[in-house]
Every structure is written in structure tokens, then in C-alpha cells.
Amino acid sequence: MKLEASLIREPGERPFPREMRVCVPRSRGRPREEYRPRVRTERDVERLRRHRVPALLLTSEWVTRSGYPVRFRPWLAVPEELASKITSDYRLLPVKDGEALRAPGVAELVTLLLRFDPLAARLVAVRNRRRLDPNELYRRVRNEGLERAATRVRLQEFAAALPKVGTALDREELRWIERNNPPLEEAA
Image 1: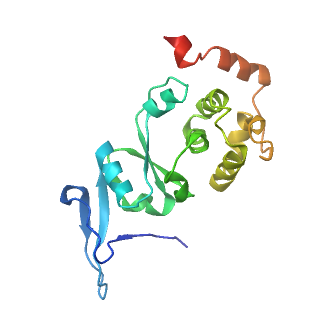
Image 2: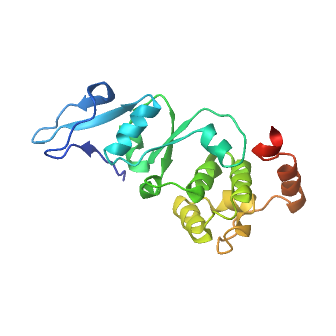
């Protein structure tokens, strides 16, 4: 069984800008018009957010500001049920808990990074230890089912309640990685 979601404009609500939407042919008997947003720029992501669609652009600048200088192509994080409904030039990163994208913090950043770069997730957690809420990190990792990736980079040091699933990297190896990836201030 497959869950599908649609974006449907409510009566009185402003539609997406014309260049950003693709209208889907109506099914028989459907009174409202269904849209498939087309996301090509950062401005389009902001427009989605203004229309209360939980979407987040994960950029290397955000990760760099969080203390880990890195470069990568941006990812568009959207709720899992909307991933098939959005057309985008960005790579999509489906998220199970879409509400987490509404007001992202360090825990959300660490959780998103766990999907494609667990070592970066660890380094961001280390450098933002004071701002990282252990309960929020626990909840996000569990909601996304990323316990194995979290165990691999020993995120239990930041959220002790996280279950250990699989094997973890050696502590000395992680310390070596932390020493050899200096924070932004030392890198300059």
C-alpha cells in the first residue's frame, strides 16, 4: 500500500506564482485544482514555506556556518509524502517528520546530514554541543529511523537514550577525524 499526498489550494488562498506551478488534470468529480510545485531556486523554496509547505534547502553554507566547512550541491528536504509531488532541480531528501522542517535547528541539521554524510553530522554535533538539545536529537533520529547511522558515529555521546544499533567507529578514529577537520576559525 502506498500513501500519496497532494497540495490543494484552499478557497481564498493565493495560488503559487504561475512560473512555479504545474497544474495536474482534474480527476472526475474533483472540485479543486491540484498543483505540483516546481522548485528551481532558493526563492522558490521560500515561496513554498510562505504557503505553509514544510520544505527546507540544505546548503553547504548552512553547514559551514554550523562549524564544519564543506561544499556540496544543495538538497531539498521535503516530507516523504510530498516528495513525489514536487518537481525540482535540487536533489530531494525525503523526511518522515515534515513538521521538523518548519523551524529547523541543530538537531534537524545533524539528522539531515546523517542520511548522506554521518561524519559531517558528528562534527556539527561536536561543534554545536551547547546548542544541541539531546531530547530533540533523540526524537529526530528515532523518527527518521537513523539509529544505525547515529551509532556508527557515536551520537549516543550527545543523546544517551539513543539505542545502539550496529557497530560504531573506533573512538580514536573519530578523535583523529575531529582533529584533522578544524573548525572554520582555525581553517582560515
